[in-house]
Length: 113
Image (tube, rainbow, N blue to C red; front, side):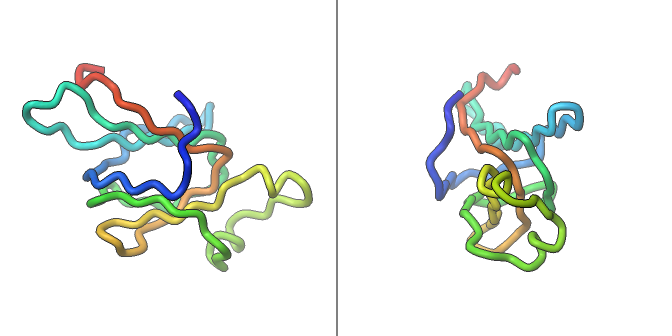
């Protein structure tokens, strides 16, 4: 799995698949579609903060220029701040949450995983 370039326009309906507190990892997965043997998985690693929905239509992920809501929740001082991405999530082009994380990765996974 490699880092994905931003912005991401996935044009897929996604759902929150898992969150691992111990690894600070959030995973979204696309809904299974008949005739496909893979699903799209988006993994956010080193998550510091998030506000998500359970599902997204045509998920888009964009870097946030500045957002008072994000800044109020996350106070990462000094040089460490530059290591984290502040990402807006959009559902059908409408703002629908955010994730502050160290990296975001996209991959195709077999549907039986």
